[in-house]
Amino acid sequence: MEKWIVDHVADAYRAPDPEVWTGRTTTPEQGAQYWYQNVQLRNWSEGLLPGAGFGIIGYVCEEGVRRNQGRLGAAAGAKSVRERIARMAWHHAEKTVVDYGDVVCVGEELENAQMQLALMVLHQIEAGQVPIVLGGGHDVAYGHFCGIRAATEGKNVGIINFDAHFDLRPVTGEPNSGTPFNQILDEGLVDYLVLGIQQQANTAELFTIAEDYGVEYVLAQHCRTYQLPTIIHTLERFLDRNDHVYLSIDLDGFSSAYAPGVSAPSPYGFSPAFVMAVLEYLLASGKVISVDLAEMNPVFDVDGSTARLAAGLVDVILRG
Ligand SMILES: N=CN[C@@H](CCC(=O)O)C(=O)O
Ligand SMILES: [Mn+2]
Ligand SMILES: [Mn+2]
Image (cartoon, rainbow, N blue to C red; front, top):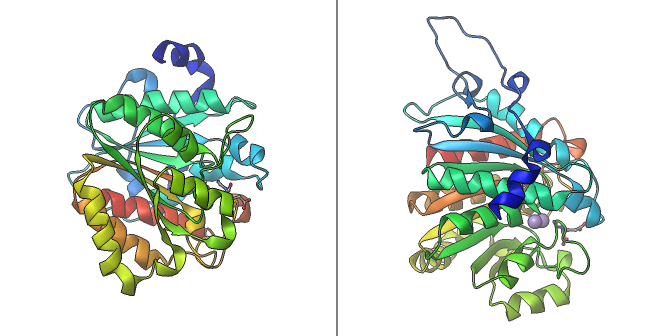
């Protein structure tokens, strides 16, 4: 796999852009108070930054959304989230975050972008760094998982997806933003748990596919803070049977009251409070090996609220 990726690396990679890492200026006495003053930028060609804890990668790709007949705009998602991350107050002394730049989908070459992402994720995990991948369509998950799988041979890796959708569509023709977990499950036994499934957004066929693969899911109407004890019980069992957890957060799992800037919005989704509580529980386990935030679409965002929500989730991830 690696040789094939390297053949395409020149096209599918873009160095980090210093222009997105800006914000309020501070005096020398105040020092570095904001994320933009603490995040380190690193061109992938220089290799990994030794000792870093977290590495941001943008997945600049809406080709999967296009193939899935969705509304476009997700290619600009990573940039819009980075701009909000940059402006957040920094409270993570002792932690090192690197921006490793973007994986870029050139034209319709989605599969190249996925393999470039796999390579970057693989190397980060091998170096003990936690990738934070900012999408981009949810096809990010296939490339992301390929990297995780390569880095964790012999270990049980479970996937927890916060999403209104199963994304278990069978691949008929080309893969797209609705197929990644079908592709993953099709290639081997993986424990897949989805939180936030909305019945009206998933066909009966998709529920059958989920059942056939033994996918565990919690419906959106049960993803409420007062139901946390039951959810925690489900998560506890999931954590017990897996060595590592890959967390995927599709922003369309949130209510469109909080996350209008996505390809497929819905008012019935999560509140931020619910997701924050679940995230804190999962992160405390120490088993979260890699994270992505998918489907950010700034074209439909309102006052930057979805990008701010995504940035806040990154802050929670760093807090651990
Ligand atoms: N990324 C996945 N997209 C969803 C929603 C599609 C839509 O409603 O436009 C899916 O394929 O099921
Ligand atoms: Mn979704
Ligand atoms: Mn999804």
